Amino acid sequence: MQARPYRSALYIPGSKPRALDKARGLEADAILFDLEDAVAPEEKPAARETLVAELSAGGYGSRARIVRINALDTEWGRDDAVALRDADCDAVLLPKVTGPGDIDRLANLLPGRPVWAMMETPACVFAAFEIARHPRLEGFVMGTNDLAKDLGARVGADRAELQTALQTCLLAARAAGIVAFDGVYNAFRDEEGLRRECDQGRALGFDGKSVIHPAQLPVTNRVFSPSEEEIDLAERQIAAYEEAGRQGQAVAVVDGSIVENLHVATARATLAKADAIRDISDGTRTPDGRGD
Image (cartoon, rainbow, N blue to C red; front, side, top):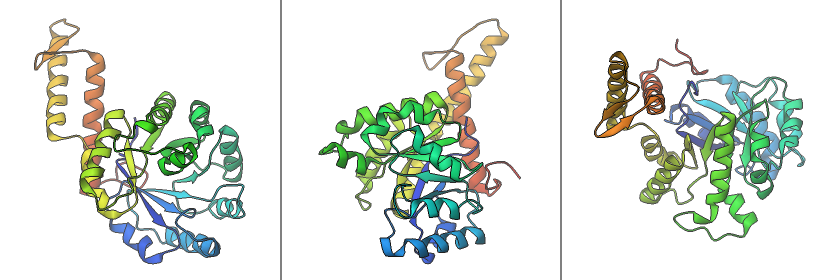
């Protein structure tokens, strides 16, 4: 179980000091500092320097600081990785991954640094389990826009065209015990559409969702947080199961449904996530996810 919640991951351009500063006060569980798509080619070297300086300045609190570099086969990727060897970030996110060999290449450039993978190509979906099992890999971020482009798919509101890829990558992440972020919702002013897609992502089992605008954070955080009803049910399931155990029973009944040990495990995970979110809101969590 992850020590910190990962409900939302906000992309922030590494080339914009004002946006980087604003991110210090936003309610995102993770910041995806972007040196790739959000930065024009001519700005990439300067953006790299700007981002390293802003990370050194600190102030991002309990937010996971994940830097998306350029692909290693571009003219900027290796320099990005080298610049981040001693940077004050939690992990490095590699785009255009096709297989575990790409993770090896980045890991060799970043001794001891956790690595994340953008899952955005047909090749990486087929290799998802092998990628997820890499010993340095900590999480997946679904790159649904690039994946749809490569597939030539016309993606509808229900994302039926992407379900095979989404579920394959999620299965791999769960088998390996790593974090998995759903892809972005492009229409950042469409709150209802965002909520619908967040609901779908949570129902599938994603930890959270990557977002492209701060306005998307409230809905995303709310959907990926345990509701009061879920917390209440979890507490009652645990209490009923423990009481059944004291009476020599292996199962309990709550609201007309059987409660077994697997349901209790889920209930405890729900309460742990709720506690972690509460700790962040109270300011009692350090950047590494542990208590003060």
